[in-house]
Length: 415
Image (tube, rainbow, N blue to C red; front, side):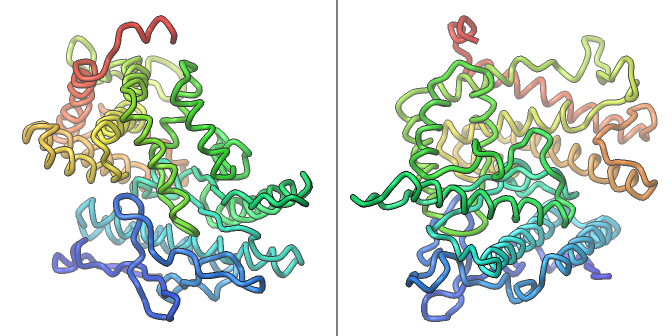
């Protein structure tokens, strides 16, 4: 079993980062987006005989492993999580350590999938592309291996006079097959298929750059709640493989729309404010009244989702590219968007809910139960219950902030 012992000297700022070799074979630090994308040498210069792909090897750890080996290796990440918890490592260290390993596994699955395509006679990628994570993986808040949320952006094919529609279909078909291999490989490594089909195997989440630009244009000007939710999903994204400049161009498109109009942030805020307060008028934690989760509260949907949603909106408004919730809090605080008191409250709430969710789900796994984010408040210790109540109370506070800063009453006529 791979073990990890937390050492205060080995804090987040001192941990080793992944590196990429540049065109001269020298290592360069892989700069993650956001905030400091793109990598100058994200994609190697390609000749007709070279694959359009990155040439790094995830610190030399996993590049020579096949999918079967990667599946075995992925289980060790769960062992590391247990070790981190036993050693009382700070949440920031837990999230960073596990996110780096999950991303390294993802890159290795992609490399193995590309090679499988070549071995099966389909060749290497015909165009540059970028694989992006969304959701908790993009925010570096994925602890247990949760459902996949990913997408693919590929470069627009060069248009030539003698090109036929079949040429475009061939490109689309290649990336369709590649995405299926990658998604299935991740599933084999324990990253479950997304029940909402937010994966690169879905054409909605696998497009050329131009098609992505068109989708963002449509979503940003739409009053359809489904389009608003699609935009919400996409706003938490982080490229993990390929040509990062493709992702940067999409981010620039989003920023351009937000600079032109406040409607995007106002519609996102309006969608969030439709959710109920997790604390009752009597000051009690709102739990399920019936069903299999009677008297329980869902830590994710009752608390974490609303904190994440609100901070995403504020980050978008103030052009903050950082995807992680704690990083967004820090940058919003430094810009004086939120007060020192609000910074403390939001940080504490996020850490309380995340750690309780994590320890609860780990316990359920050890009991051979499925992790479901539900907890009985009545079964917590008095101090745990008080901390949970304080954390959930912050949801009401941040929704009041959203209502104050973003709501436009006329939007309700279209929603």
